[in-house]
Each structure stands twice: as C-alpha cells, then as structure tokens.
Length: 311
Image 1: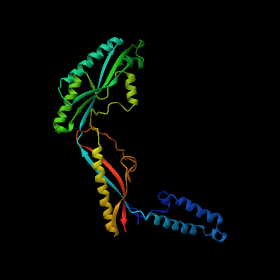
Image 2: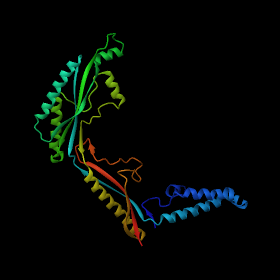
Image 3: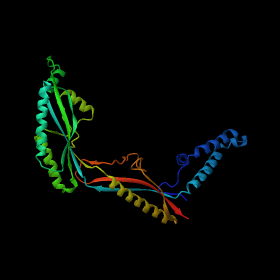
Image 4: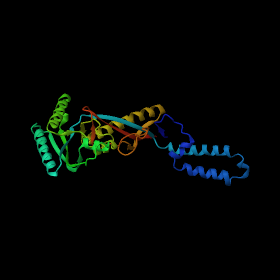
C-alpha cells in the first residue's frame, strides 16, 4: 500500500503521466486501437470505451504505486548566532597626475590601517581584495559638459582604489549589545581614517551611470554577519526534519490502521532540488550563512522520506 501525505488523495487521470512514466505509452496504444485497429462496431462508441480503458490503466498504475510505503515531507529550522562580522571598506587616492594619485592613495592607506591596528583587538583582521587604477573626471565639470554649459576640455584624473574586508571573529562570544558597540566603533574609526564603508559612492557621471545600471548602488547594509561553516547546523536541522517526517508518517499510519516500518529512502531537497509544495522558491543550502541583521541566523532543511509499511 502507498500512502502519500497529500490533501488531494484522488489524482485526476490527466496527472497520471507525471506520476507513472508508462502511462502515456499504454494510453497511446489503447487510443490507437480504438481509432484504427478496433472493429468498426466499436468506433461509434469511442468516448465510453476510451473512458473505461483510462480507468483501467489508472487502477493498474495505482496498484503498482500502492506497493511503496508512506511518503511524507519533513521540515526543520535551526538558529545560531553569527561567529564572524564583515565590513567592506574602500580607500581611494586621486590626482591629476598618476604620481599625485599614488602619493595620496598610500598616505590614506597607511593612515587607515594604522587606525584599525590601534584598536588593539586580537579578533580583528583586514584583508585586501586588490587595487584598481582608472580614469576619473571632476563630476561638476562633467555635469556642465553634459548640459552643454561649457566647451572646456574635460581633464581626466588618475584614481587608485583598493577594497578591504574588515573581519571580526568570535562575534558569538560577545553579548549582542557589546557586539553592536564594537561594530559601530569599527565603522566610526574606519570613516575617521578616510575609509569609505560599504559600496563606494560614484565620483563622476560615468560611475553614477554604471551604478544605476547595476541596481542603484548601496542597498544600505554596511555590515554582514556570518556563520562561515554551517555543517553542524545542517546536520542538526536534517535530524530534526527527519524526526518531523517520522511523526507525520506515524500519524498517517495510525489513522490508516497499518504499522510503520523502517526508512526506505530520504531525499534532501534543501541541498539540490526544490522542496515539495514550495512553488520553486527554496534556496540551495550553502556552506556559509549570511545575514544583515545582528541576531540569530536561521537555517531551514526540507526532506522527503519514504517509510516502509510492515506486513
């Protein structure tokens, strides 16, 4: 017997093709028989005959499915505090000459890194993501040129930009108020030292135009709270999801008057596929969990479990 955890216990015949791969072959042969190979006396009664044959195929397919067991879905959500905080900072140096830009850039870089080092926080680290060198145009001059208010030649400057990741580890060891205080101090110190926190703001018309085309620039989230490795969380969530599925299956078995047996198969929809009845909106589970909020980060697992029915 196959018992499915589905509000619509009666499937229409039209849905059998998706559930039973051989359904379309059987039907096509039967319908071909009625349309061509059937005796002429039967051709005038095609509709009743086709209906009867479809019901017969439906009964055969259902009987085959009924040998499976009890199929149910299970869901569980676990939460944990972030262990790491990440802030993005940008240092920029600009000058009419490349050498001027280089001097300004290195002075700003030295000042910013010294300010962060002076915080004397052993859990604080700064990682560089590399630097870029590009042309930059005075935004006021560029705007006047775009509006046709000047004929003067636009002078391009050289701009050097370096992006940093400011990381704070062991964030879960701090009370939430203390963690917030530490994060705010990091932001203030970085800004006072000349770092741009978050997505860098455009310095000319072309940068502004590109930023608008890519979604409008800064979304307001200056800080990311992370759990770099969610392996243990996923394991616990999976355990709870299977327990949830077992409870559902036991309830169905009790109502059906059968005895619940061992687990025949388990499929984790969170990792590879779309969970049942999710409408296709489930996300794939990543090893890293990220949130813009300072509180607990949730992780949800969906499983599909098939239980045996003991004879």
